[in-house]
Figure 1 (cartoon, one colour):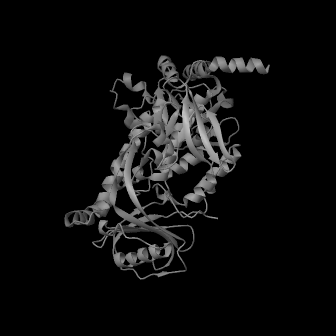
Figure 2 (cartoon, helix red, strand yellow):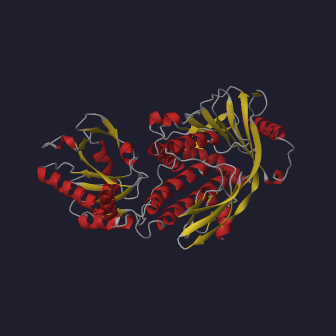
Figure 3 (cartoon, rainbow, N blue to C red):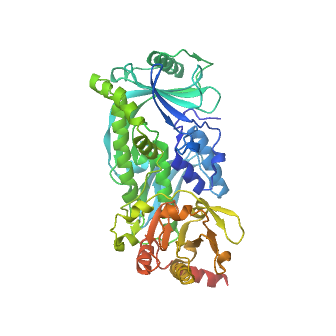
Length: 525
């Protein structure tokens, strides 16, 4: 049974990748709709069309009700022996040195939980944020939105989303799973923002009327509305995301306009960034200061999203004559310019989000590049960039292995000799791998990536016969790359920069990690 509320529906391309790294294949994201394009129109005139079809190199968008996304995530959690406790409320917490004592109220009464950390992912009216006294600065928009999930019979194709931006006001229709089902999004002008509705049926009827008026389309609604609601939007961001062992994520940390479909996806990215850091800290393997990088990395990203969605909201919703003229002329012109359209798609899909400049992003080889520190990155990824998936071949078995398969196992050290695959170059990379293992044990998995098998390396190497991976990273004479568990390039350096790599590892891992592993092995023996 679906819940009474229908929430986010847009799963962006980067979130699909994150799910893969979590062990959730794209085939599990069902029921869903996969629109192939987003059309901008004024009445019956098409102004521009953005192709979303992945086969043409554009990021895909999956339209899937958030309740089904929750279900898929909960199933994966159950596979990992976790569980969700429902009907349980946090009523308070206190910090006792380095631990949190949380007071809970559930179906069986009150209880206490002692934990190392508390993460408030409890929506815009976060109890955790309020009890921690963290400011949530921002403002509300004057407009109100009507949402309705309807079954529509009309002449438009179901495999496209449609946005009308004429003088009568904005209206958007996004396909949902089902032959004729759509999410209808209608902003009301400020003068109508306070109007009261007695039922979902009234909201759906008004949304349907405005759809007809603003589009000029002939349509027929089939049956009763699946769901309808009205809501106000705000833009706010928490002053900070950490207070001792307490953290904020998702809407508890930031809320913004739904323009661009970023909300749920931002929350998932927050959780994925914080998750691997908390895992190290919970095991006592994190370096001092590692958890502070959650604020450093994610606060900046959210600030940019709030700025971008605000500008988009004002552009799309403004009704003064000047802004209407700008909107109706500028939007088609911008979208029809291929380089700008690609940048917009990369931003909205979150594929261009990265952590350059983070303390966890180090380009060691750039500092000594004789062509200058900025010339090299035109040939490959920089530290902090998202690493795209690519196919490799296991040299010993001949089976295909994707980069994402490797990243899903945790920290990944990729060792590429480049064009110089001479025995001494390969041996030097082997020394790097052994030094890393001596420092952090099995916390990092190392892989030698060759274009062809040489000198008996078949038992340990991965093959890159097409050179796709080498081109992605811009390999020349030899490269050492450490990829984070969330699929971002953390460290990039040459094989002879062992000191830089050791320094980077010390930013991430407690250097006691190896001793702890050895002690554990001795206890087992």
